[in-house]
Length: 336
Image (cartoon, rainbow, N blue to C red; front, side):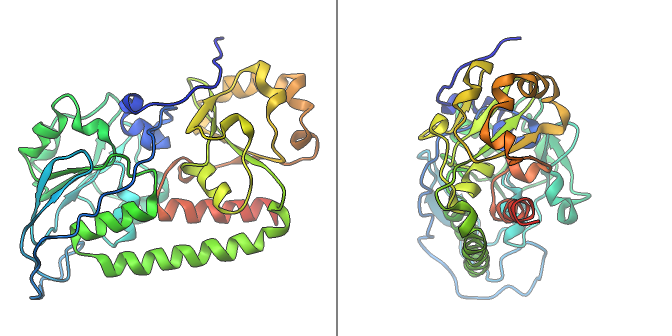
């Protein structure tokens, strides 16, 4: 069995596409965070739209041009009712929008969103970016891609023939700003403001609730899949939530998006709390080797009973909904 040492993750390995973005796919590659550009429209109508279509804008706007985060000029339709945004479903649901299709591993979509998205067409990213033909019949009026990967190798050009296509540098790097950006594209700024305020309130309440447990303590989130085991940094996923709640991070991932972990490195895990997410059992083999190691059993967190097996793909997803669900889990584990 081959083990790898810590390393930085680059953009190009987004090739799992949303294998990266979405942990449901169980990929270990993640993009570097970027700051969303401000897509404020250059013109806007104040007339109202009484259509009441699900996920549509409440106001009928004039079309406007924006520059996306990779430099493309995108003409945003005045009123958008049909959105395709694979990997950004959390953001759309937050804004009350149902996409025309949802990202899938090839076996299932993001499970934590299925109370809202059950029945929505699934498009598999198991083999990379699906062909544009898989989207044409859905007639999207706007396509939004989460990372700069989608601007490469003709992907943006091909999809732009279907509908205006906006590409983030990395929407997963700052979910609040990305939510605001998507809301501006769709004319749903009020909903974004409300959702972000609720998120911030929950964050502050949860942080205060756990203050006595987080003070001076380190926590690490471990993501296990069929390829290896990874320590997740504080830029996204469960690692981001732990950091936001006041836990310090392990030196092994300080400044890193994620890091591979080898058997020899186990004794270097300097964390008071360890949260492990096994991707649908795909990490069984690696976890068995790690947990059998005397270096693992000697860890203070292990000896102190502070290792938690977390369930759910929200731990390896980004978005206001995923992060709030993760907060609830952390509280349940630490304050049962």
